[in-house]
Image (tube, rainbow, N blue to C red; front, side, top):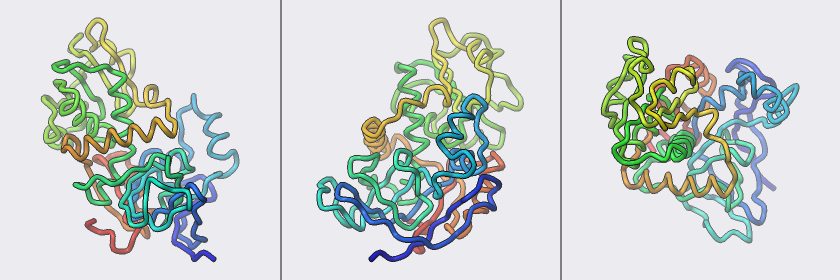
Length: 318
């Protein structure tokens, strides 16, 4: 017999109000799975798009087939989480009960908006970085993996000039820190005026206000241009590249995911987090009971870094 748990579900596409806090059966781990007591999760742009079914036109058909033609195929959103292992299948060797972990749920039908989540032990799941709270660890996963995957495709060398457009978002805040502290680049961040001090504090050598200045008019300056929000014209962005420079777009260059690849990326991200080269930026935190309000806020399109959700009752401040 399993008990019940709180979870946020959605049974139709639409505004934040389609999200419903309810009680459902707790999952039971299979022999090769662990069950995680979820302490924190997040509201990502991906969650917003799935909930509202607002996807790029080129991805519309695939998204309908993947997410559900008439209604959502997966009732529980939540693309990343952090928590503690509370049960293990009989064949599990990587983890034990009580282990603090963080994970991407992208390959396991999402599910972070619930008190418990089962995952295969060889999935994108790792011990939580010791220097991060559960809330910080949950917020580190999606934007961190995406930024690292994209920047690696830029083959960045120390001293090269890298521009990051959308530098104050979940991917952008990670990308600024990684480009500067891990790859050794000279980093220019592009964001709104209200976020310039944040981006500067993350290590950017220069920060441009996109409402006042068009970086593409400066001529061929950069070795790499990374559009971390996919909102700037690729043709214009390429005018800012030196000969042989590399253009990166978060929609075009963040693919190629698989379970083992994501696990290795998560482990690489963990090293960067534990070394202090990257630290998650958290804008706001909400309890699970306020998930509708959290989605409304992210819907506005002005969040700085990440919006986290406390799932466990005592998660505040962890």
